[in-house]
Image (cartoon, rainbow, N blue to C red):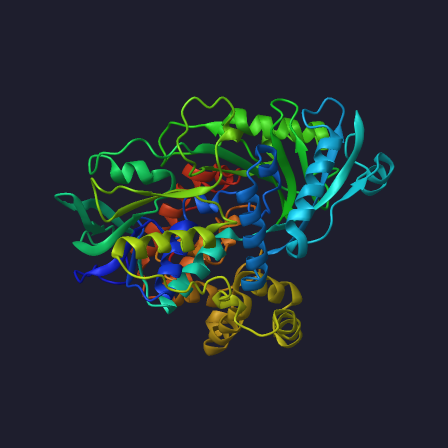
Length: 551
């Protein structure tokens, strides 16, 4: 359900897809005065954007492919995010251990780190430094010493909640005048002669159909870009995305307190073991994928691979499949590259494909990453202005803060919020990490009604007010939207299954849901997490659904 009825009035640009890249395009285009509509068949950030390694990285690994342009862009965009979204992006030091037999010897990595530090210059987050085997043994005593030759500390960045980055792009896009229609499917392109004049759409819940006519149509559907074009316009294959999978586990024996970035023994791929939200994320894989893009899950082989490599580098870990809380898998939106033997060779940069002259008014976005989403939005808007025949307009997104960072001194605000909040320190810190300065809005809602101050999830301490905020002010429609991409309760160890009922009850009392819808939302949410995440806890929870009534 789109929250706004599909319009028939013409706009400057219609964007297909509300992942991180589609939202970045909408934000940049709207900030330059263009009339923008975004159409998303599911929820914002519900596809590839929520399945990444959650790193805002400066592009160190791209040095290996001599992609200096992408390295520079990544460093710059990381620096911009620290300024415009300090509540969401944080420093993230990592250890890179060197082992005998690695395909990338220590001296080569140290040389790459030196080159990176020089390129980063004042935008760096701290100089890299070498670490001796003795220091590693003291600082990371559980790390395998078998063939250990030393290591290096590298300073990068993390966005623990990539979902919230998407939400804030949504909020800012709408503040700037864009319309975002979620849970609305593009059923076809409007093609007349050699022009694409917009899209036909259908509201997923009401079935209402309509069309949006636009001067430019931007296909920003990530790995689904070819599906949007299929049967509509003649085009070569554009997407060649690879599958990346992660597993989430509880702290394990010997678990590090910093990120460890190391080379896998099985295939020499660089992979991570890193702390995340009180647990550990292991990943990722990089496999050629030609399957159903709507049914992407981590395979048993991938899970075994990640567990085996983690157990190898942390001999005391002893991880098995039973330790996996859930898995996450997605397809990277990479350009199709024929004949590639090593997927790491595929470019991680982005480009804009203009389908003119055969189909004027249609642009397809190829590639894109969390780190460089803003730059992609700027580049696409430049192309949109060119196609529209309009002059250049100054880009403002390089300095414009996201809604959760609209404060002169973020650190001072955070200190004061924790000091004066009526909540526990842990609850207050969580609100800051998720909402930034908008955490004040959560407290305002909680104070407006006694029921909204209640805790709906014991694991996180989340409040009922957050459920209401998600629906009323952040365009959440389904229970999955609320749990997985707004409150983030659904990313906990049981994927929010134990809190689903309490959140649905809040929606009944304050959002106008009836009991029938609440029951249906709980069932749909359980189906969503079963299909996409394979949570360990689901078997224990099955059979408990449908008990009790809502009041």
